[in-house]
Each structure stands twice: as C-alpha cells, then as structure tokens.
Length: 341
Image (cartoon, rainbow, N blue to C red; front, side, top):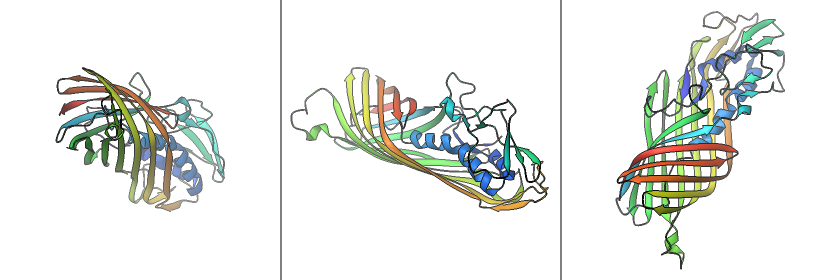
C-alpha cells in the first residue's frame, strides 16, 4: 500500500504523514459522482489536521536572539486522531450504489485514519457488481498514542536586535513513488520594548507571523489502465500569534494565543479506464467508463489557537515540548536542537 508522506526529513525520525493512498482509486467503480463523495469523505479529516500541523512548532520561547544569534531545531508536530475521525457515515447523495459493510462488520466507512484491514464493500446496483474500497493507514498503530506526525527542520536567526527571521525548508525528495517538500518563513519581534513601564519586567513578550507552503505528489497508477495517474497536493498556512515566556535558568515556560488559517488542495490527475481489463483491479463492469482529471478538492479552515509549553536548555542544547488546542484539535509537539546567542 503506497501512502503520500507530505514531509519526511529522514525515515528514521518518524513515520511520515499520509495525505492519501493510491488505493483511493478503489472507489472509482462507484461512478464519477459517487466516487467524488467517497474520496472527499475519506481524506477530509487528514487534510484538516495537516492544515493545523504545518502552522505549528515555530518557536520554543518568546525571547528573540541577539544580532546573528541563531538556533537550529528539529520539531515533531503530532495531531491526536479523534475516534470519530476514523469512520464516516454513509453519505447522502450516492446514487445506484449500496454500502454492504466492512470486513470487520462496521456499519460505517473507514477514513484514511481508519484501521488497516477493515475494508469497505460496495455494490453497484445497476450492474450487480461488488467491489472493495480502501482501508485506512491507521496512524499510531505501533505507538502508544494515535497520532499523525509531521517532522519540521527550521533555523532562526537574529536579524537585528529584538527581531528574528525563522525559516523552515525541506527540498523535494522522492520516497516510494512520492515526491514531497516544504518551505516556510516567519518573523518574531519583541513587542515588550514598545510598551512603557514593562521593559524591565522579567519576562519576554513577542509577536510572531509565519507562512508555510507544502507540495507533494504520489503515483496513483496500477489499479486501472490509463496514463498520467497521480495525486497532487498543495497546502498553505498562515499564523499570527502573541507569545509570552519566562526563563528560570535551565527551564523556560512559554505560552501563546493567536490566529491561524490554512488551505489544502488535492487533485486527482490522469486518465483511468474504470471497469476495463488492463489494471490490477479485478472489477469488470458491463458499462466501463473513463475518468480524466476527475477530482479537485479544497479544504480551508481558520480560527483561534493557543499553546502552552516548556523548554529545557543545557548549554547550547535545547529540548522542548508543548500542547496546542486549535479548531478542537489537540496537538503535542516535541523538539530538540541547539542555540547560540
């Protein structure tokens, strides 16, 4: 089963996040309109979580660097998968299609977050054809918590006093038929200095603005004959936050509130000769059909977010962990790196 890792710094760091499987093509025998509904429901919870993930993990303190001071960090952003996101109800609007059940006797259809091996079964009533849809990739199956994980490598540099430039970047890399990469830029500025009467108080207070863009593609070929079969993803995120931190020698506590917005577009490209011999699919239809660049999905969200975290500093080495609540989604972040002021 192929998955779409949106960002993977190194395979030994963490399991990659998946946007969709090449198995989404298994929905196609349902017909163009039915499959659009099913694929959309299948990938929706994951795309929404990704929009929150790539707006996260930008900082571990509100204190800015001195000029040319810097930090280099690796951060693992984890969004906790909710139980109600692992399946979806049989959607309205399906025509000429019946949901029979799953191989584990569920009355609901698995999403991309669903269990591996719980395969949905459908019947195309106009043809009497029975076919299987995709199961999920079950994030966290081998770990104590059920979560999607997004690693991020980033650099922060003091441009001038009280202002930092933060950059995150991963070049596009091909892994298992998947090509993916990301980049982002942010600015953190000390706002405490501009407020009379609090400049000397023992805490740091900054404003942060950040932008992230992610791009990826996955090979969708194999299930059906055709050409140019692939999935393409483009994601963009913006966040504006105010951050406060307090340092106690080796320990720093930090917190933030702010706003974030994200959009993710996923396109299914190519031609797919559905129901005809020639692919791996065993589904043969009396009335086969061809899909050409069939689907284009866009998911957007925006709202308030809040973070509370802790950083440990041992000389130049820093370790951090924090918790974020955004759009009713819960995120855990852990990171490590080093800093020089």
